Amino acid sequence: MSATCQAPRTTISTPGHKAPPGACDCHIHIAGPFERFPLSEGRAYTPPEASLRQYGHVQEVLGVQRVVIVQPSFYGTDNRCTLDAVAHFGAHRSRAIVVIDPTIGDAALRQMHEDGVRGVRVNLVTPGGPPIEHLTQLSEKIAPFGWHTQIYANGADLPDLLPILRRLPTDVVIDHMGQIPATWGTAHRAVTALRALLDGGRAWLKLCGYRCSNEGYPFRDVDALATLFAHVATERCVWGTDWPHPNLEGTMPDDGELLDALMRWAPSLHAQQRILVDNPVALYGFDPQ
Image (cartoon, rainbow, N blue to C red; front, side):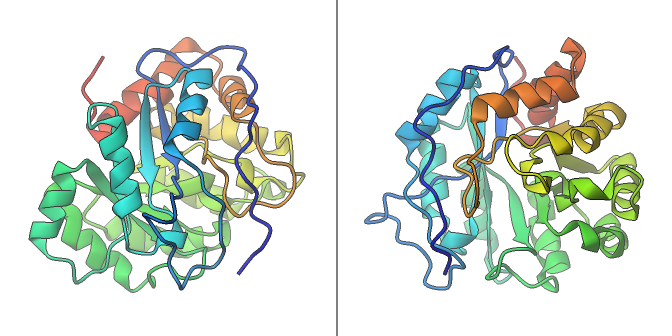
């Protein structure tokens, strides 16, 4: 297991422009407290604790009112910590994306829906995630609840995944800007495949792109790719910090700077409203402002 995991930043820059009213951070993780929510024995890395109180400070600095808590790989299919976070923030301003086994029963899924779950994550990058063979089975299981299937995949795999994702009976959300390395440029076949998926009208993209950087902090090399998607698929993009940035080497992202980056990629007020407010309302079922 990796020993490189860093603790969350204690100081966050105030962004040049705070998020608009009703804005949503669509991708965070909560870790701990570990005495209540122990880590999975099969995890690929060991994170430090990242608390609800610490993330509350991030929300205050950024000006985001809503949040989507995504089940991290280090908790496996034990979603208690993630669901506890939704209970803390309240269903009116939070949602959860969980990791489940295909054998889960409908009663458990109904309870999760009542608890604020709106999607299932399939992690094809970090060891310990469900095998790709479960993808269709999981999607069929959650389709009656109106949930989506969230995919964390490497950019190199996107062209081959495209026909599989198009056949799923749910909407699809692509994590971390498709994990397409910035050095590949905007004409790479992985970018073409992702654009084709988004053009189909049943897929969404998380503009959470610093993990696509080849240069590292401050991650400016992802600007060209992120700007492209924010422009050609404004109505299909959402944004997230990925706080507390688990299992990352090098300089930790500054969440205020990450919000400033989105404002660079989508400079118009219309695009910012769509990506930060309107699209999360449509995707996660929040009440409109």
